[in-house]
Amino acid sequence: MVERDTASLAMSADELSSFLAEAFPQADAGFVIESVRPLGAVVDLASDDRHLRPGGTVSGPTMMALADYAAYVAILAQIGPVALAVTTSLTINFLRRPKPGPLRADCTLIKLGQRLAVAEVGIASNGDSDLVAHAVATYSLPPDRQR
Amino acid sequence: MVERDTASLAMSADELSSFLAEAFPQADAGFVIESVRPLGAVVDLASDDRHLRPGGTVSGPTMMALADYAAYVAILAQIGPVALAVTTSLTINFLRRPKPGPLRADCTLIKLGQRLAVAEVGIASNGDSDLVAHAVATYSLPPDRQR
Amino acid sequence: MVERDTASLAMSADELSSFLAEAFPQADAGFVIESVRPLGAVVDLASDDRHLRPGGTVSGPTMMALADYAAYVAILAQIGPVALAVTTSLTINFLRRPKPGPLRADCTLIKLGQRLAVAEVGIASNGDSDLVAHAVATYSLPPDRQR
Amino acid sequence: MVERDTASLAMSADELSSFLAEAFPQADAGFVIESVRPLGAVVDLASDDRHLRPGGTVSGPTMMALADYAAYVAILAQIGPVALAVTTSLTINFLRRPKPGPLRADCTLIKLGQRLAVAEVGIASNGDSDLVAHAVATYSLPPDRQR
Image 1 (cartoon, rainbow over the protein chains, first blue to last red):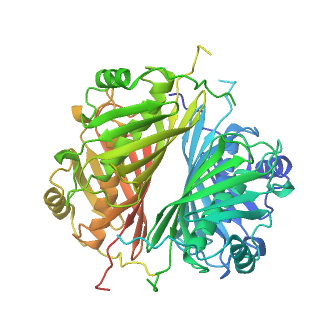
Image 2: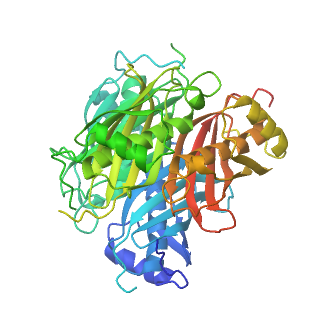
Image 3: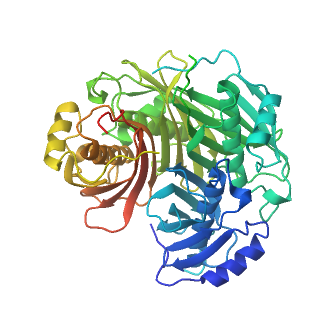
């Protein structure tokens, strides 16, 4: 099984923010790319009213979208601005009720192959070490023609 | 393991719509409860701009939210208007690119125990038999004191 | 997205039993292919001591193996005797404690594409309608050169 | 949500090995508890013929059983010798073909609540940093009466 070259990043956090704002104009303005690293990314969600459930905590679907977005960012940072990576599956476990306030998603790619990427994402209240949710998602990648 | 009584429904589609509109005022206006049945529910999504991805198809996070909502409806139809059922996990597989246009989620509860419910949800373009997505979700239920 | 031709089966239950006994000589002798149908298969497990947990019920790992096997049978019935289909993921929910005695797995392929198959499997005590476990598994397929 | 006390371990690796050998006499002799730590455990699989697939690599079901076992060990190390913790779900992603030879599973409990535990498990060829499989499993726990 051939893995992709992961020694260097194809895009910076700023380049990713610009690309995603253009490619997904409907994308939630609340997601902020905090940083990218080889095989990883950190994305913050400044939760506002739209995302809240009764009791003031962030909704499950918002956390699913955040996990998916963080994984997408980590993949594009590595393979460059292709809009064709598509989510093929996502499993999320909700572990604790999030506190009101911002959330942080930290994503690590545990596989980045030619056709398939697998991402693990932990979501925590900003500054907390306990996870409020944990997701694993898989992505189908466009063929990598340069190698 | 004690299962709940499922012979009769606790709420109708109309009662569920009213309850959910009040309990989740931020809930997506695009979700329409089409019908409920013992251990099952059908929910439609009249997709509009907010949910679209490049290419005009419904986004993955929207389908996750739709699956979660349909399962929540099927559970409340059975156990009544308690806002305390919480999603503990969700696994979704994206099977085919949805056509532009409305989607229909059909949910069946494959377990409705005292503390835990497990729902299976198939999502298809309205009128199509091929699934565009398939989800399994689990819910933690409040104790059922009456039975 | 191109789907495969599913109008006819490539292998019968008997042909599959022979092929799998040869390709996987270590395979569990307790799995019996009951029947195959377009996009589906039924596999029985005559539970014996090896698979039991304290209390006399079938173990979780045995049910995982049964679900994976049933999905593999359903795929090979459709695409023919290629040993190269590989499981890429499996999610299983354990719903009820199985009674002592034989189990039956019923698998339906909810997607059979050129590169990816997705299978849904329900496991029940033989003769029972309530599921004891429910699985969804994904498979990476070898390219289909003939079509 | 009340979490359990995790400051100290209830059982050592040796005590766990003895308890599990007695409670699960059918358990696979190939699983060796390497170490336990607060909210974590390492279990090795000395792969032998029984677990191999064509090509000499460990089978998927064996890796599922290994992940489940490692999570079970990590939970019992924390809550003590109760045989009543039961797996409620397991999701596994197979990432790379394992090399022939021993595998090591490293489990971390990302939630240990009163009723529910959630475990994350990475499996790698012994000595390798790349994961061959990654699992997330959930467990229903017996009520903890002492605290």
